[in-house]
Length: 193
Image (cartoon, rainbow, N blue to C red):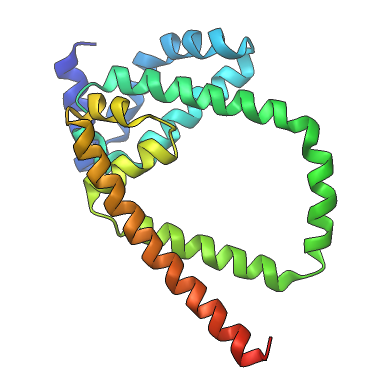
């Protein structure tokens, strides 16, 4: 697939939610990405899950696709970081049984679970309110695990610009968290705690 075809598919996916273009992109990159993912995990089924997760994230964030200048590089980097996350989660699986014991304690207090879900919803809403490029950069760094320099290369911008966008994102999220904390403090004072 020539780079111009890839660019045309990315624009069709981003602007028209073109599922056929997405399918063609997926089919084109699938064999190479499976092979690449398998070099890290050495497990066919997990490698398939990794590649599927990468493409699910691509579809979820499809509106930001035109901002990516080197899509192939982006795919391989996302696959690598997703592989690393899968590998880490496999290592953590041995300790999950201990964590399950703690979860049983929290199950007896459904209010804390509801509060945690609401807090996560507010944080996600704050992330979604970030300017488009700022949100893309934040997600690439925090969700995909890319470094500032890698994001700068992917988006053809300077690392300082990436840093400025991350500073903006952190400031906006800090405001959101401060609001949540002040709400929590107000609730505790009202309850006399």
